[in-house]
Image (cartoon, rainbow, N blue to C red; front, side, top):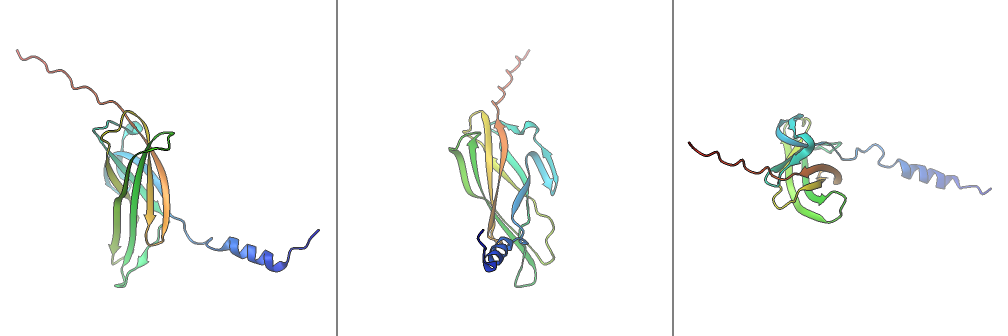
Length: 166
């Protein structure tokens, strides 16, 4: 049996422990909504079903993001989001937008919890099941997180025929 030098074991353990205490950006609570009025205050859209004439309203929260102290003694967090839409199960992107969101929170006092939202126009999407890929960058921590949010496009209901006037 070969003996592994103690220095190699020490270096391996040290390397595995690097960054273990640093938080890693994540996204939680991705929801397709009817409306959003604030932090954890939204009305979820049943079945995440919309027509191509509707707008996709998305609510989510970044977690384990970095807040930095500003030169003036305040606090700052900054996020940029890109978005990609694909038909479920396919690799081809049917809609893409870089910087669909650019949000910077600045306050003189410590920042409270942050939620993010966007509104995406769905024109030209045919009925079917889709995935929105949320790509969120924390520019302060220089980290990226992604989340897939499922939704569906349903056919628009035909307009009701006008009733004849008597």
